[in-house]
Structures are given as structure tokens and as C-alpha cells.
Length: 412
Ligand code: GLV
Ligand code: MN
Ligand code: MN
Image 1: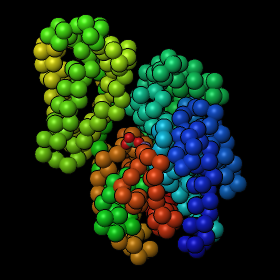
Image 2: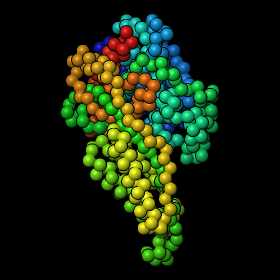
Image 3: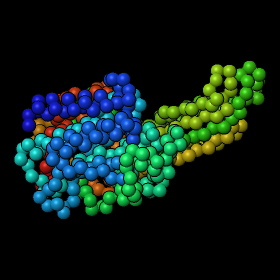
Image 4: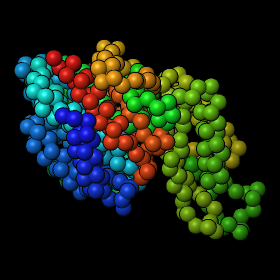
């Protein structure tokens, strides 16, 4: 299949999938287990079946589309990513790894390649933490990194549990059965947009990932005292939002001062109660996301946060409670898959950069049960998680061809 044919088919499919969205174009919003997500899954399933792949979905909705190998008992070679999208996102995060993975399989089929190991496209449920607060729900369960019980009890903003929501969406069966044995995959390779600027700045078409950063997420609840914005004197206040402001800036400072560019920290949500212009905020809830490729550096930001909470409590006479949602370890990519990716780039005549991923991905959790690696393609200005996220058809097609070569090498 020529590069142009791959570009055309993938571009058309990316546009079709982007049109299945709860946001006005060009933004994409596709939250797990909403009718929109279910519609996108049906669309994708049909594409996989048209290519002769055998599709199954597990009790949490992870979708497996399998191209059987000549030795069906051999462990599979996996590839894939996610199609859920955060509110007001773009078209490419996750989607490039799913549709690019499908296209890589189709390319090999058209070439007449016959794999010995089965090749499986995996579409993970809820890589994004939007609905249930925890990212990579599907891959955490596949890898045994989250217990079925803990997963079932997670709730969305409206108090609905994962258990209720997945059953209403038609995913029944026992969540315990989602976990895969360690022998299931021989290798797992994920194609993704970089979500950072390095490849574009250096004009390099492929990034080969050697490490995936470790995320920690927590919710922080601050309880102060409300009151009349005119009546309560400044000296008497216990303003929960002022306490939150101090905490947010201290989190930013700890990440900035860690001495390493891989330390990043974000407070992405701030709910203020009661939320009236003439009322002192009595309660605030923050969502905090801290990441690093180095676990002890990441954990020192967490410890600094703990220390600052104690300090602010004493100084501002507020009560602060933290709820740690997850604190995961970073992953090292498998050297033999990294080597297979490098060889594939050489075969395609494409220069590559080895790099770390500061974003997390389902591959982080798949690394607990299988050797993994990732390849990145450039995205414009490094933008991601915003509607103007963009990757060029040429870069997507190149990434797809490198992935196809790699899957061929690994599945022989
Ligand atoms: C994934 O979307 C991430 O937040 O890294
Ligand atoms: Mn994302
Ligand atoms: Mn992603």
C-alpha cells in the first residue's frame, strides 16, 4: 500500500471518528460509556470486522480485534491505544494509535504477510480520567494494577459507580475476568502523538520512547468558614479559596524547583463552594496531577505537598484532607522492542529520536504484564488536549509504516 493511499484512508477515518463527538467541531469530547462513546465503539468495531479481525470486548469494555497467526497458541503481539477524549480535546490523542494500528494490520494483510504470532489491536477503556478520576482504567484492570473491587466502586461526578455505568452501557460479566495472564502478550507497542514539541522542533518524524513517566493524582479538600463578603473582617476569615491559592502556587514551585525538566505538576480542577461573588468560599476541592520519570523525585513533590498542607492548616485555621487516587511507578521500555522500532525506522529511511514520555499511556500499565515500547510522531506546536491538536497525514502514515514493520518483525 502506498504512502498516499495510507494517508488518504487514515485521514478520512480520523475525520469520521472525530465527527462522533459531544463538542462542536473541531473540538472532540468523547467520555467513556456515554452514548457518543458507544457509537464510536460500534463504528470502530465495524471497521475491524471489515478487515477480517475477530472482535471481542471484555467486561470493562476493552476491545480486542485479533488477526490470527499461523501458530494460534503463540503469545500475541499487541498494539493499540484509546478513543475516549477529554472535554474539548482534539482528534488525534489515542486515535492515531488505534486507527494507525488498524491500518498497520491492513497494510501487512495487503502485502500478503502471514504472522506466526497473533496480532491484536487493543482499544482501552477510559485511558482518560475524566469520568472516574483515574486514568487508564482498562489497562489497570488488564494488568492487575487495580483490583476489580476498587474499580467497581469508582464513581463519577453524579455518584454513579463504574459497576452501574458499565452495566447500563451493555458491558456485563465479571470484572475479575478482565485481568490477562503474563503470558498473553509477547510484546505490546503503542503509536501515539508526542504531546510535546521536541520532534517538531528538531524536524524528526519518529520518537522512540525509552521510559514512561509515573503519574500521581490526588484530590484535596479544604474546609474553611463561609460568611458575608462585606461583614466578616479580614483578620477573622478562614477563606478556603485563599488557602487553595497558596497550596496551588506551592505545588507549582516544588515541581519547578525539582531540578529536572521531567518533573511536572498541574492543578487542573478547582471547585469552589458556594461560588457566589459576595460569599467567602467555605469549601474547595482541587484535583492535582504530579508526574516524573523518576519515582523519588515525583514522591518528593508529594511529600512537599503534605508539608505545605500542614503549614497552611496551621496558618489559616482551615482543615485540609487529601485523597490519593493513584501513585504509579514509571516504566522502562523493553530494549528488544526499542531495537525492533529502530530497525523499522532504518528500513523506512526515517530518522528517529529516543525520548521519554511525560504523558502517561496505557502502555505504562501493560508494562506490568508484557514487554512494551512506544513510538511517537510529531504534533503541531506540541499541542494536545485542545481542539487545535494536529498531526500531519504524512507523519501519521510514517508512524503507521514503522509500526507495521515492527509488528511484522515481532510476529514472525
Ligand atoms: C493522558 O491523557 C495523560 O494525561 O497523560
Ligand atoms: Mn489524553
Ligand atoms: Mn492518549
